[in-house]
Length: 41
Image (tube, one colour):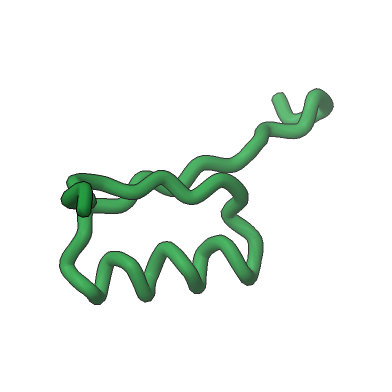
């Protein structure tokens, strides 16, 4: 089986941030990515 080295979670809403937190608590490095709305900035 392949070893998991790092994890990316796409979507930083309620579900994505919760999943990212659980993975981080399990000891894996996590990258949490979300989109930036076109009218933001």
